[in-house]
Length: 117
Image (cartoon, rainbow, N blue to C red; front, side, top):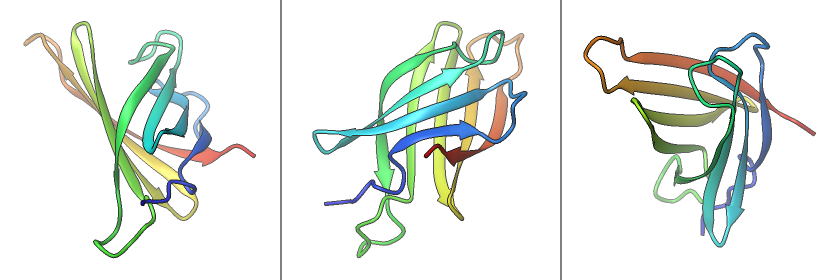
């Protein structure tokens, strides 16, 4: 079984004026990892995205530690893909936003998060 202890909990963006993710919570429920994302008012994402199932990854076939995760969701006119990884006690999330309209640019945002105690 893969341990998710180093990623579970509530995380806050290190940048206060983000247009992406303000913070998120990762929670293990019945051996599955779920993410709740907090967006910001007038940002790229809704202010709340709840209970997205996340896929977990390890560094090797022998490892039992979760070091990365991903999740995705469709939000009206856009599809969002989130890929996170642990690095030096932080979680870095790359957010890919694919617009379903040919007139809008697809977007990429990379943000750094620290764990709240």
